[in-house]
Length: 339
Image (cartoon, rainbow, N blue to C red; front, side, top):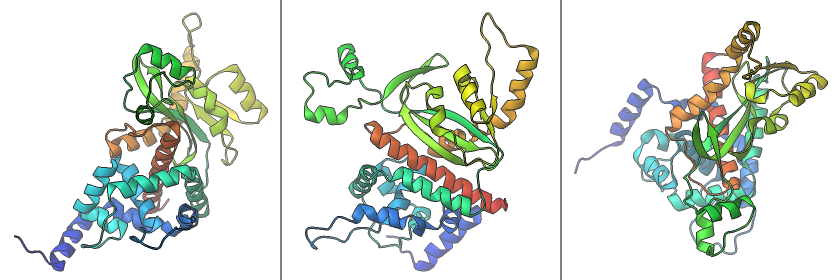
């Protein structure tokens, strides 16, 4: 068997650093202790017995979830990658020979975080850090939504009808109910059908950081969540969005609240856009397109964006952690650029 020494591992890490380890830079950029107070609420309940292994540190487990969000890993894959990759181990502060959280432990911690409703609180806590670091929302806000797919459900037509009516199909056992996602919905985009949820986000135009987000099933029209993600904390009153958000009601509400609408105009078969309106849309696109960077980066890092969870509560937690992970990586980049 090939013998290795501490020197070998040190040399390997040096080569990783030479090629640029984004996780090392991320670890140095984020003050992880900012999240401890919220995370400790998961462990507030008294243990009935002191017997058994000591729980992993909550900040360590939170960093595991951030890794999982960045690379869209399953619980089993996360355990394997931590064991296999030096960069993952160093990011988590784990040394060779140290016990690594297994898949079951990762699942249980995420479930506790989900039940406590902490994803959005942790997101807000980091947003406070961004503001304190000089990255306040500026130069207007961009609103958009992205479909997040989940594994398709193979239900009968009658079963889908019952689900849409908010009922549980007859004959479903308790075990089967736990395996069925009755919250996700179908939607169609560009003649293609998708099944899952939507990630509605508000991005500031200057730093391209996510400032607000909401999660719905995929059938909810983008414009229905416009007010929920609209923020009054941006230094500018400009609001960008694509034509899906354009309606008389939204335009009137923005005007009443003294926002400046930069929402794309949309034409119709009987009322096509004029050349002036088309030019206006092209001008707006130069700013609005920045939101596509967020969805693009998330897709690039994660590869397959399918969420492997059941129910909107779990989807809200996973999507929230994904948005938080993006903001952390973006923050790391902004610091490196000296913005």
